[in-house]
Length: 448
Image (cartoon, rainbow, N blue to C red; front, side, top):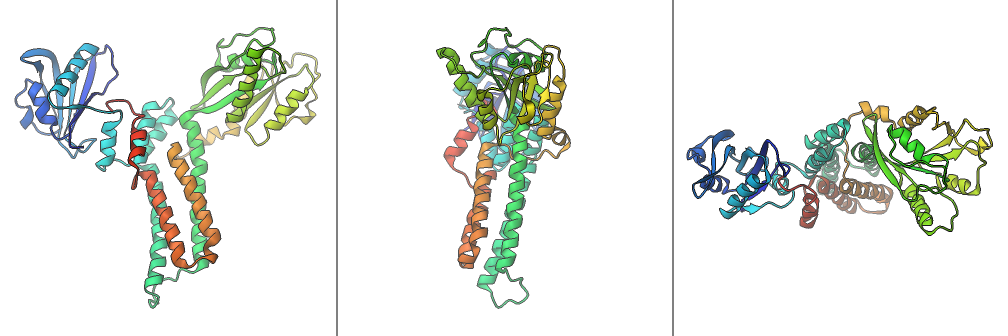
């Protein structure tokens, strides 16, 4: 990080304003070489300076240049932001001049990476920045802001502090057994402390799953035999004709995907090919894909026909749904009843044709995923797959220590607890692998 980086920080294209960002020890010197305002180098921090960007004396653009002296900057380095008129030609030309005068083109996410490496933010806060950029609902935005502000990091710091207290108590008992005024860490007390830690980690993991729904949406797959009304239901839920609807069996041969927002949570809806035995090779591929999507879904809407008997294929799907989040939707209630609903678990009866009871499906989804609770709940979660994977390791390690403490000497238990403490540190970046950092920040856009 001894060099100076530059990148266009705004979206490429025609616009009123574009920003080129520069960060590093030579930021002020390099910008001064191409900036007409000679007072810029001696200007105070966090000031906006007017002038022109010059190329061998020729004016390239009229600009406002913001000077920010480290460490009171995002990267904690000297930072310059050049506000220029928007346009691919202008911004590319200014970036080219910066590179010719000593800057290096920033890698994706390198400004945020420098903020992390310089102690400005931790890894969960960095992930919060990415979540904020990608947020699609107000709740996702609010959750990302909480993570950026360090609320999620504080949860991990609190767990580490509790663990450090247990470890230090064990160490004192081992090193200074003669001290009578120090609480003795018995196996029973240690078991209670570990049980409390296990419960807290478990709660964070459960809540983080809810946070995933806010961040990524609920993957909702509509399943059923041909012509039960899957595509029609998709259209009704969306309020538009997204899928082709006919009375020809096998009309939908591949998936049709769309999104809708329900109580500030995105439903990623997937209409699938009708499930049936078929000799048609293309349709058969669609059926296999439907079954695979059902296994991967957060929610399955399983549709049946009120005017048809339940088939062996339907019963196989019902068996597959056990242990999953699902809602049985019985469609075509305008027909004479032939369906034996005695084996169905609390179905919703609708007529997609008449737009009857569609809102009841939405209400059932809200109830199933506690969307009203999520609407008012504290939005402090760990939503990255990386953080959750480490936290699952922590949970299993705590369980192992709790179950095995009677079989090991107390100093061996202390080693295991220190390993758990280090695992928690990986979540916030107290310890990290360089390859992991490169992978994490490569998901950011250039200029961020």
